[in-house]
Length: 404
Length: 166
Image (tube, rainbow over all chains, first blue to last red; front, side, top):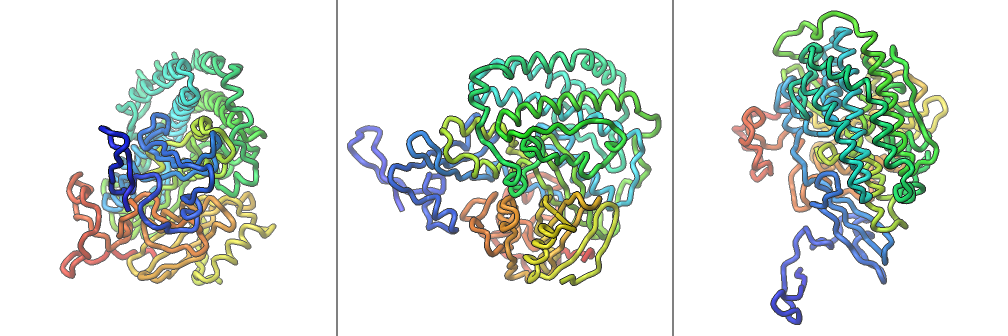
């Protein structure tokens, strides 16, 4: 199959070029019912290719959009540009090693990526984690959640064409990232969680930075979001757009702030409590509208709840060791384990099978962005092409996690 | 319907069912007022070395446990299973992933094509007989660069790793 395109030298001359799999219409017969339906164009419809190197696709995502005029008719996300085969790599690495592979999955909230596998491995080992380690885990994870949500606010505004908010939200995010760097030794890929605890105890620099930050954290959030909450352009481009109802949300399996914005109070921290969350007092904010604006506002509410949690953790933090005693080479008994945590994007799960050796037999990562991104397909039809990115940004997918 | 013992460990309950009963079991778990497993937490393929499995993790507010439904003993050379998209539309991509990585065919999924690997790719990377140099993960670059299985595993290669956790 060839396509004919006008020559650069003389537009009247058509040059034949062989079709590749990167053309909008793939050069092979449709393989599935859905593909056949999508790549058949009716009158007035055309395909537009967005990405894979589009600046607002939050990574490397290719969207094939079918449009009629300015309206989106259908959408086909093409994934895999960041696929690194992390599950396969982890199945050929030992348990401690597998945890470092999970860091670059969802690179905005790495601590959650580590926490889920670590918890699954601890189930396999029947291991109890010292209480101080549990508190430190919750503390660092909630800080990471705030950093991730702060970045989301900036990104979302950026995708809507506002450049200023990201400059402010990066201030907040950078303060937290520096704080976590003092704790873990790394700015982004922390590699801090260990099977049986955490890598190191709280140190002086971390605590002094945390104290500083806690003094102005809430005021900072208010200041960041004041730029957007009442901004007429922002509100008009988000309110009522990309609306999901409660039933669709459950059917699609979307989780995290996206499902809570439709009125479903599903948060793994309360739905299936882990770590020390049962001992902490916090609310699960929900909203009923289910549109982009609700998803945005919900994340601001969550930042406030996280600050509240950090406050309690700092007051209740017990003394003691931060690592359980365990041998360096670990060989769990044969068995299966599943652990899920509430990451900033939703339910982040890990399923591990042990076969008695020092390497996981099966290592499965369930990423919330992967499921959430699916929701753009039913959400988009009828919207303007320019709003595609606005709705996608409000779902907050991170391609590193989606593509594994 | 159950083809194995019900196991409980930590916060997880595990049941094991035959491939033929997957629609009935999932529908009952989802719709029955006594169960109400509304959230499909995960859908994963597993290659045990002898057979294929599909593992569902479900959440319900009626129980403090995660429910793990293992669909056991799918034929390794032609694994086929009914799709769960009639209950959870969101299972579509997870089934595509299981197809991409293990070659498990979900009948009833209307978009079962590869999701991570390129469309002209022919092998299934997470199967246990997929060739990967032994120490590729310990020394990055070795064996990772050429992940595509160009040659079938030869007889002298290391035996397929088989799960002892059945």
